[in-house]
Each structure stands twice: as structure tokens, then as C-alpha cells.
Amino acid sequence: MGPQGGSVTLLHFGLTGDTRPPSCNATSDYPSAIIDGIADAFQTKRMQFALDLGDHMFVCDYALATAQAQMQLYTDATARYSGTWFMTMGNHECSHSPCLSTSKNANYVAFMDALAPVATKPYYKL
Image 1 (cartoon, one colour):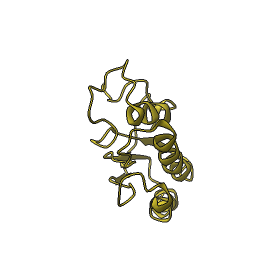
Image 2 (cartoon, one colour):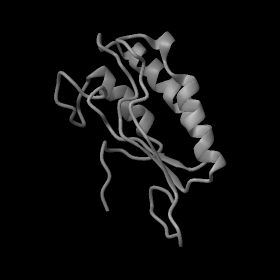
Image 3 (cartoon, rainbow, N blue to C red):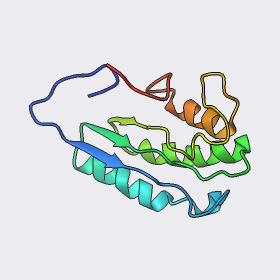
Image 4 (tube, one colour):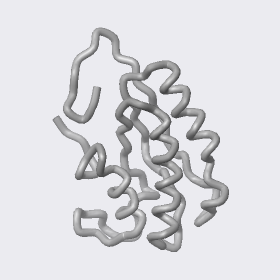
């Protein structure tokens, strides 16, 4: 199961969300061990795909470097899983400005860069 679809006789998928640091700009407190463990469990259980519910970062100063660092920690974890991992945009990826395709909001830009291997828009449709 990937971005182009597919079919299976029995669907097994992983679901996660809100894997961000406990406070603003606390990249050093990113819960890498937790998200690594989740990705490892998805891999071990051979989930056909993974879906998250957003909130991969907690960046309050909207510094692009901080947003990119936190998204990199998240995507490092998702790379431990060999299937497709569909990320969704939470309120921490888009706040304080409209998150349109032309948005320069650092959190949105970092999220969209991380989403690029799967999608070019922050939503999915058939």
C-alpha cells in the first residue's frame, strides 16, 4: 500500500500522533526513543502503511532551522519503517498564518519538505 493505492485481503495499518517535544523549541527533548519504538513496532508487525495525526514539532519562534531539526528527528524515525508513512498536518505544523502552497511559515515549510516523498499537498484524496 502506497501513495498510488493497492489492494490487500486484510488491512493492517499503524496509527500514531502528537510525537513532539514537551515544550516550545525543545529539540533536545524530542521524544525520539518513543517514535523510534513506534516505527520499529510497525516494522515488526509488518503494517501495510502508517498514518499519523500530526503534531511532529513544537516550534514557537518559527525558526526554520528549529522546525527542520525537529522534522528531521521525526523522519529519521519513520525511515526505520519500510512501508509508506502518511503524515498529516496538525496545528503545530501550521499556526499563526494561512498554510497555503505559497506559505513561508517555517513550521509549514519544514513539514512540507518532510512530506515531499509521499505528497505535494498537505492532504490526501482519491
